[in-house]
Length: 301
Ligand code: GRG
Image 1 (tube, rainbow, N blue to C red):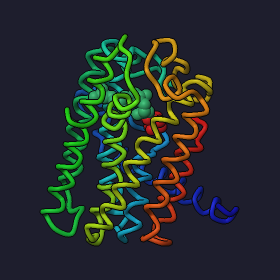
Image 2: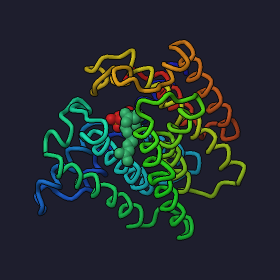
Image 3: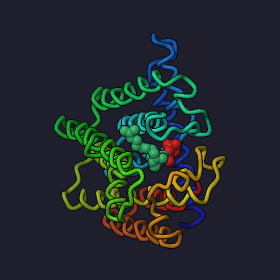
């Protein structure tokens, strides 16, 4: 990217992140609303933190179909609420048992396990409320499809399923295809949904265009996880805002463990190249999707 393009991307990213902070704050119940502790925990887990990668992807995909920011902010919020719920539950003692997230104590540390469980549950249902509360697509059939996409991406054939495979494979050796399948579900499904949801907020895509966008989304979803594995080895906890080095400490299968650091970096670069190639038919309209591929693969936290 040229210096000007980098500046444009950063400005766009800051604008979307600021908009998302406002929208997420508006869709979450107030901390003054009964039960205050639960609503406070929900707001604590969602607001004031996180890179908002999934909302950024939804907005960038929306640009391809000339979608309005009014629609995109809610489609993006739905995905981010699901993401926040998954992090709250993943951090709990029965799962990853972590104490640090986004540089702050995890929700169960700050509010207790029962509240963390409820906060995650309520965030999940809030996501579907946001997605069904107002007009987000040009027709009801497409909006129903958006709800279906998010449900599939979150459930046992998507993110929850990937988390299940992860939990049940502790202490087992995974092959590369098995590791890949786990991450396609656990991390990739929601990232893919972010792109698809954004693309349903605007004008209709031809089947081959939707296919191209979906290819981008699948590549980026997997690249995100490969980079996550690399950062878990290379970055420190202060930079990541979460506990670094946990994968190796827990003997977890990772791309770095299976491919080596050099191999993992090559894999991330290959996925980025394949993602970028599929954007060609969209020309300038895909500029932010293209920039995001770079941001996701070259990020440092
Ligand atoms: C509990 C149903 C359930 C699912 C959990 C997402 C997930 C599944 C677990 C999180 C574990 C983890 C660290 C996965 C690696 C990829 C990932 C989702 C990282 C966190 O996402 P970022 O980097 O986080 O987008 P921020 O804080 O920036 O939003």
